[in-house]
Length: 227
Ligand SMILES: Nc1ncnc2c1ncn2[C@@H]1O[C@H](COP(=O)(O)OP(=O)(O)OP(=O)(O)O)[C@@H](O)[C@H]1O
Ligand SMILES: Nc1ccn([C@H]2C[C@H](O)[C@@H](COP(=O)(O)O)O2)c(=O)n1
Image 1 (cartoon, rainbow, N blue to C red):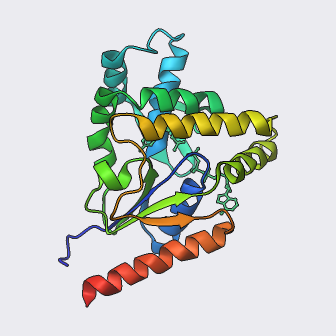
Image 2 (image 1 turned 60 degrees about the vertical axis):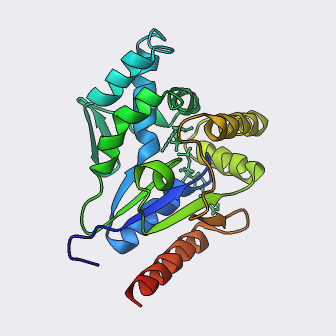
Image 3 (image 1 turned 120 degrees about the horizontal axis):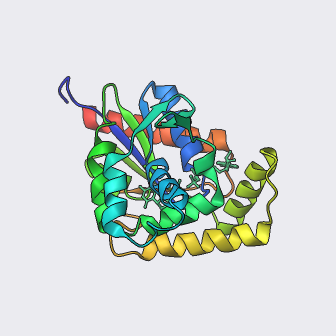
């Protein structure tokens, strides 16, 4: 390994599996940078939603929006132009719209270089759907982080309630199942468990246990690389 080598830990998984929470904590423990790739798709969706739905099915214009996004990630803030949209992009409506927009190959291509630019020393932890398969195929460690759809709906329900947002668990479960199907069955960069990826089922793990598991796997990967 040379001094310029920049390790990447890629954590992919379905909606509400906890990948963002786990990826951020792993990044903080290792002192690595963090990329929430889903936020980029959500930002494109937010711009499309604010356009009054005009952009909804226009792949070319959506890809232009993706390429031209004026976004800065700063701590917990996500600044789109002069506005902090960190909360606005977290809505279920925005997540569902992002999932639809993410099926367009031109939108995915437009976001590729922007995602790869996050790979900086001393390392990167990133989460999404295609981090290990497409964006960082050479990642040092690839994790597929999941949980049952029921556990994920319950986690999402608690998360929304904690923010004071009313929710219905049956509706959340249905949304999650529909999003899983869309994100896993699209023709470009679908969410899939690759042969070189480690499965981490967190259905009966708490957050700390999931974080420890990723850190342990990364330590093992590094030890193997040194041997
Ligand atoms: N192992 C776990 N046990 C219990 N709750 C968890 C666990 N991991 C994450 N959570 C909680 O589940 C909720 C969803 O987690 P998070 O937002 O990280 O998921 P995500 O996969 O990044 O979602 P999305 O794909 O929609 O961005 C959060 O409230 C988080 O605290
Ligand atoms: N690498 C990625 C990240 C996200 N998406 C799409 C599919 C998701 O349903 C949507 C929102 O992502 P989330 O914030 O829930 O992680 O964006 C993708 O296709 N590829």
